Length: 161
Image (tube, rainbow, N blue to C red; front, side, top):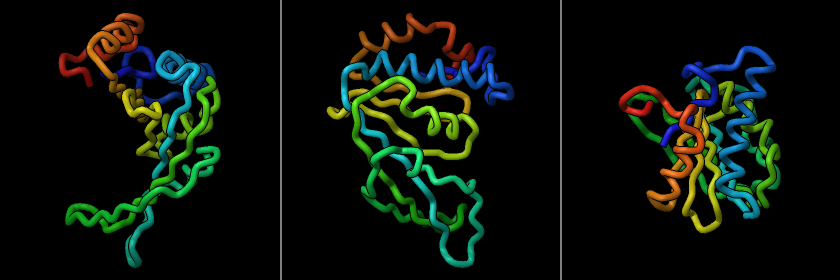
């Protein structure tokens, strides 16, 4: 399911009050998913091939993922996009509200992409993006309960986006 991080499907925060709302919504759902558990946090950076311009922001997502270490690299060769290599880092730590606020704020500002937060059994996945978060849960009952708890944060669009 998809949650929006600001009222009325507003995509970006422009004031500190709006940033507080964004981080509050991210942290509320994350805490409901992962309270008392350890989580994996993955971050991605893109390294462009020689001769290609790096269009990604100058932010080190891995530095915003405390204790993360390199996990894998993925080569991306697509005719529609410049060739690059994705460097994926993963960290593991006990979930605490607010611990990822700098990373989540960078995501909200579209300064980093590809962040995933998941439990160590890989049953629940939280994928924040600029404008909200996609959540994948272990079963329909969990999904329906979370959906009901935060119905006002769901998209009003028929497709859910």
